[in-house]
Length: 387
Image 1 (tube, helix red, strand yellow):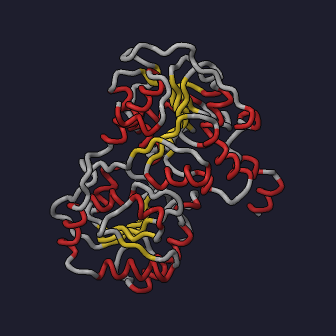
Image 2: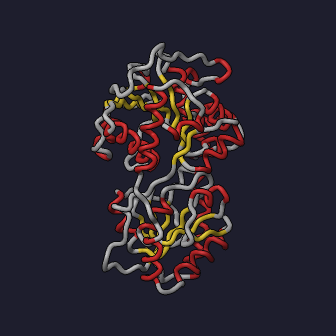
Image 3: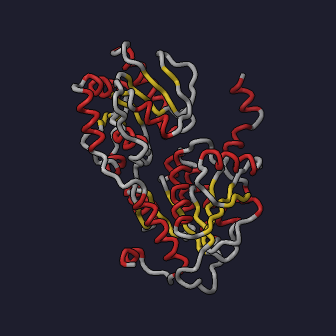
């Protein structure tokens, strides 16, 4: 009945992330830039275009780290939220203030236009289209790319529109070599590149904790996170190890064929506490690797992942476990990992393998690149490191 109603009501159109008038076209873009550049060191106003965040959103958390870095560098920030369904902007702002209280940025509705800024940063393919369509005032435009987003879709309209967003002429900043490589090979764009970080002040071993379970990052609403495959693998794992508790977090899911403890959304501190009760975790991603595997490692939990050359480029760690993306292979890898002894020494070595200065490198890069784009005449990307 739900499926029939979905079809008859035309609900599929609600999945389109942009209103028709907000779809830009790279073959027709003529975007204004300022006639003069501000003096070096002058305080800037920097806009960031994004979809409204849900509580604890990982992608928004990474983005807001970059926003905070520009604030700490002395610049003023404005968040332009785009809700194609016309949601209450103040309700969206309350989510931001509750979950990311360190942000000082103003919050505006992108539907009212994007202006009054020296530079503006798109944060997803949808927001890049919105910036191109609603940000016609003179400004510098950049694009912080956390994943190669055409891969979120089957080959079709969404794939094509996501891919076209990389051709708008914005200065592209890729998070990790996987994204950078695909931008070069698939679109012919040579981006600035920065690297992933891991907050080891949050994700770390907690003394006097017994590790007895396994944990899975479950997001059925994001196909790239492979929930169906994870569920099949965990079913087979439970058949092998009915005595081991299975934990799920990220979303509350229905119809599990095995017993599990469901945690839903967790704060970073709560998530670290959960990791410290687990020997291993199942983490699948079919586009750019998520932040979860390295955070697990920092907490002493061994991540079991679908093998991918793209992911291996980003996460080079001898303690990570890779397996073929099949239910049996993933279940077997998870089983071998939990049976490996000794658990305590393995957790300690995994945690010690994560050497990170947090997100300092990425934050420093973002501030430097934005300032260069605004203050300095354009130069080839390879010369920027000399600044």
